[in-house]
Image 1 (cartoon, rainbow, N blue to C red):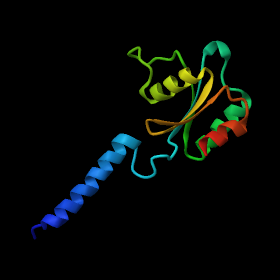
Image 2: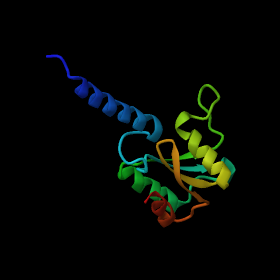
Image 3: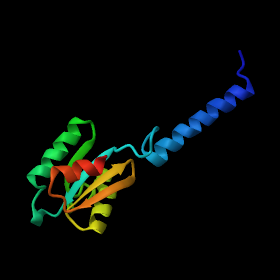
Length: 125
């Protein structure tokens, strides 16, 4: 059975929408869906306050990739690990430490100098 041109066109459009979603929004679906949350800090300032660490744990249990990143961390090639490039840029612009929420490669929100669990969890909503 030979596919009809109309069927081929529909499949092509669907494929293009999927590719666009993956390349521009980190996946298909709502472009605002949180995919990553990062507390970025300088080692001289110490790691996240306990309430922020608790919020990071809560986010991970909810299926959001949440972590801490020390701004001077490099990979084996002397580069910032790919998954932290966007967060590091946004946090540096906001002033460290900062909590950065992302939807794919897009920054949804930045919380400069968070100290409470509520601040962090609210930023993800």
